Image (cartoon, rainbow over all chains, first blue to last red):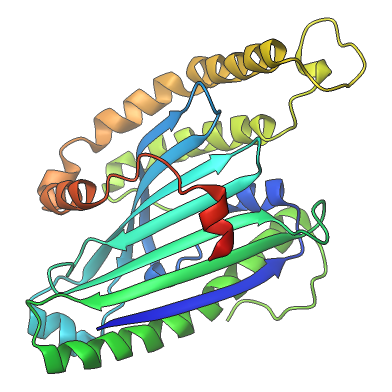
Length: 183
Length: 110
């Protein structure tokens, strides 16, 4: 069984500014409490100009403490993230997957940022999907419960991530998008 | 800016991030005539001119950030093994190398 999550909204900042902000704060629901961010690899495609970046994010463990203990995980959790920024088509795609506890549960998150169709110069559309899947190694019954709990946690963090990133964009570039400050 | 997972690499990481961010801002500017010598009025670039401008920007990145990138990478080497992350990373890369972006069409449909 797989749990799905999807979400879409917009930022009241142009695409280029959202991209600049992206490197300065990480609003990943899988990684709400970032401890470290490292760039493992970065290349620029000579044909397309697309920048591919592979990063390793260290976060405070997102799984419930009892589950971490039960599964023998460590306190810190790590997420692999690969992003593609296409300056010509103005499209950013990001995919991330948890490394920690991945024998038991995988959370694959996909994000795109594109200029809004209605207001391409001032607004950026954000789309996000996540697939949460327990691996066979986890008991089926426990697995489903953990999937649901993870989904719940993911939803909460997705909201915090959006609010947090809006705060960063406002600090960097100003603007009054009438949203609340980061929690 | 966030720390490195290996604390002693954090200063180099910050230096690299600052270099990349400054370059990236320029990279996202639309490629137009002023990016080229001569500065003709802004009009759609020929394929050749666009490629030349892009090549120029890639070379600028190598020139300005290449050294600090190598230093940061050198500092980080070994840290993944120490944290026992290299096997997990290898496994994730084998499962999904993510070498190419999804096509914009399929990404937009989601």
